[in-house]
Amino acid sequence: MQPIVRWFHQLGSPPTFDRFARRGSRVAYLAALPVFALALWQALFVVPADYQQGDSFRILFVHVPSAWMSLFVFALMALYAAIGLIWRIKLCEVLAMACAPIGAGFTVITLLTGSIWGRPMWGTWWDWDPRLTTELILLFLYLGVIGLYMAIEDRRSAARAAGLLAIVGVALLPVIRYSVTWWDSLHQGASIRLFGPTTLDASMQAPLWLMVVATKLWFVGSLLAKARADNLQREAGKDWLRRQLQEDA
Amino acid sequence: MIAPGTEPGLWRSARALAVRDLRLVWRRRGDALQPVLFAVLVVVLFALAQGRDPQRLAATAVPVLWLAVLLAGQLALDSLFRSDAEDGSLEQWLLAPVPLPWLVLVRVALHWLTTAVPLIVVTPLLAEMLHLPRDQLPVLLASLLLGTPLLSLIGGVVAALTVGIRRSGILVALLSLPLYVPVLVFGAGSVAAAARGQDPVGALLLLAAGLVVALVLAPLATAAAIRISLD
Image 1 (tube, rainbow over the protein chains, first blue to last red):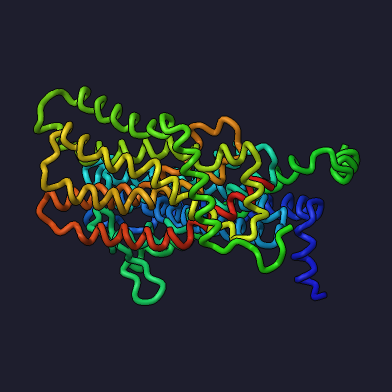
Image 2 (image 1 turned 135 degrees about the vertical axis):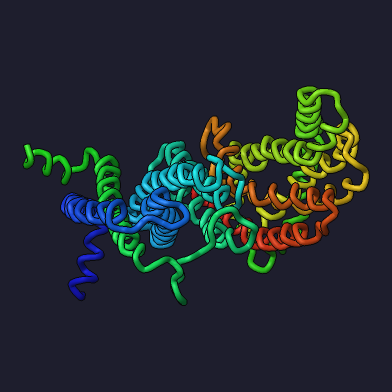
């Protein structure tokens, strides 16, 4: 078997995953910190002020990466859940459930920073705008997944049920993405496109991409840490864990 | 064991399930009317809280009516699978010779017929109580006729996910509300559009499209959820 494929399969074993996650989350967090620092320095001091909004636009560099992460994490959670349901891989169920609180956190940050930005820009803390409303529904979906996972006693059934809810909820993601084009929205339309010219000024792009990388690294670190914790909880009392704790002690 | 070649077909099993469900509902028809009573109470409470001014009542009549139907439907969701799960009939569904999504579809259809249709029948009376302008009533009824099956189908997925949990209570409401929001927005929105003089057909067609998609996909998701819950 190819070494990469074999390493991947071995990651499905709880002891191997524990070792990998312990090192991996530490590396990811340590890598994220300097990127965050550089991005924030660029965002706050280097990038010129917007001609219309002045300095208050700088919250964009926190708001936009958080928003992208809130959507990305939900899609990833649904993907892990689907793999866990189809191939019955325990670690995928663990990873899916670990995504939920992190994604909810990013969604809360998106809503809060958006609200803070909206006050000077639109004159209101909140509006029942399609983009804002669908992002709020996304938060409720995250909380629903977490709540369902907590409510069922057997961990594996709980993860599978909450995973199915996440898969059903994935239908909301395109609605959020296209809410600004399908309806009259207070929220700004898409300026950054995958295909086609980006209308965000070149002088403002660097901190944005740096924050995107930083949030991704931070997410990987958090995901591995949370998944490791959940994994250890499920494996409590098993021989390999008892041996490992004795060795560490 | 069922002898090969003698398995009941789709329609025979559907009829058997329908007859059973209707008979059970008829035997406890008092209980079956509780969602209607709840909706009436919600409307009464709203009217009392708003004050007596007919203009103000008419202005919020459509959202209140839609919410009364939606919340009453949520309360009724508990009766979708719970009693069958408790006495073991749901596990027999897993062993049935007909596809589980088919049984789910028949069950949800019967549930809609016995809980949502009485609500829709009572809606004109409730609309009169809230002084809803007469010309908005047909659009309201159309939006309810398209929206309530959609709510039942989506609610069925959530009910199946929580059927194994004792005292799930508010969890069902919490889980289903985010999924209900688009239906509510388009359903109430269609009547609001009609009230403004715009054509409600756009929103109604979106509801119909959602219903068609849900008719196909929701039974599959519900069947998967039942298998997970009974594992």
